[in-house]
Image 1 (spheres, rainbow, N blue to C red):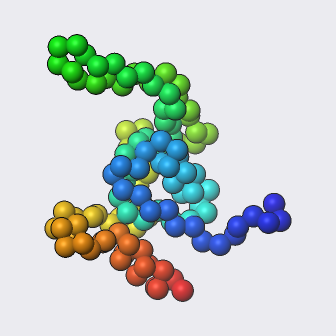
Image 2: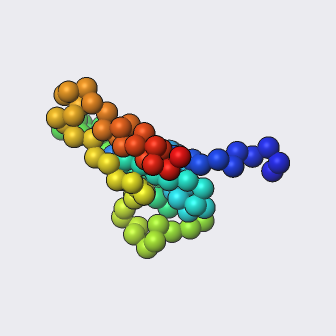
Length: 117
C-alpha cells in the first residue's frame, strides 16, 4: 500500500496484555515489523478467545470462564504453545519502582530509542 506506515514499530507489553493486543504483538514479531518491549504477554501468541461464557459457581462464587470462539493465527510461536509473546527487549516492572513512581518499562524504551537513533 502506498500510504502504509513503514517506520519502526515498538509494542509495549506487560503480563496483563492479552487477546487482540497480544495478537498484535505476535503479528509485529512474526512479520518482523518492529520490536516488543516489556514483559511476556499474558495470552498465547498463536491463538486467543474472542467470546466466552462466564459461570459463577453457586456455593463458592468462583468464576469459571468457558471459551466459545477461538481465533488461531496463521503461524506458531516457535513451537511454544504455552507461552505468550516473548519480548525482544525484556523489562520487568518491579513493585519497588511502582511505589517510587518510576516507570521502568518507559525508561527502558526511551533508552532503546536513544541508542537506535
